[in-house]
Length: 472
Image (cartoon, rainbow, N blue to C red; front, side, top):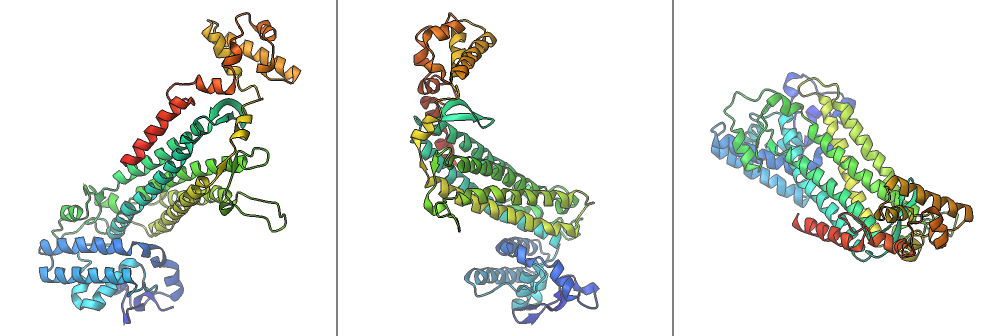
């Protein structure tokens, strides 16, 4: 490998942007170790967009001649088009994407190209590129979250009456419905969407003009650049601007929580797909087999999403560790931000797509789910609430219901199998109407409060979710 100081670009030889201080280029191994272009190449178009706005300001402010500013902008547009079409390919001997684009620009228009970096440092340049990239990448991710929510809502809409046992401690707790359960995941995903939206609001200030750390003595018009690029304003402190990687951490933290939700959902899919549960039957297109056991149908994609959650967590820890001991302002450690941020983004993006396809093509065993509501005394709370409606204090009612459960355990039966006399031996407030109120369906229907599992309450949730994602 050639040194960065002698890296080839479009057939020419160009020094690194910092070469003037050095008499010789770095060792080839040093170059390989410190280059970032393999990671930051995805920001090529964002780098060009930022450079065009910067140069337009330089021309309008009289810092460089207007005709040269126009020439640079035209050449940058040509580079953008050539990268898009494939006529120009990335030269990986360049130190980073900024060096590559500036080198190509100088190749094409000569000395004027060297003015593109006037009043700018790679420190504020990369801070700008990352923000520009995230501004279009995050909405793409949010769109995938909305798609998943819409798929879950459609499934829920068809299962408002499909009984399913709710669980605590992975033990049967109280009857709900599949629709209610799926809506629970939708609200989690909505919060993930909103966290990303909230994080986007904090990168709506342009960092360009902060320079290496102290701005510039040139009459830069930072506000003009910010307006051109669609920012709400400019960052207020140049030291903070180039030292800040909070946004990388914040987005990756949001990715981590999103992956937590997907992982938990996958855990349920994995459990529900077992022979012991058989609540869900995953499509063969989203299952795998065994190399030795012919009968196997494995939920490998759910397991992979669950496994890749740790990878995103690792990226978050890497970012937090990267900055925890850094003095102001810029330090080269911060080059490591992009690999963690981009890998976390890519992982979350692919997991969302796969999960959406996997859950959207699954079939639900409603009979098996309904059977889970029978046994386990999941209607015991309803016995207690029946007595509360008769005027009994809840703690006393809880004890009465527990006594009925103990009776069932001793007799190996369910509460609804007990006779009226058996139940009245626990409390003389119990009457024959209790049997119609403790069926799984009755238990669900009775919980018609906001956020509850009754079909009417879930219908409200479904409508609310649809209105939300349709309005985004």
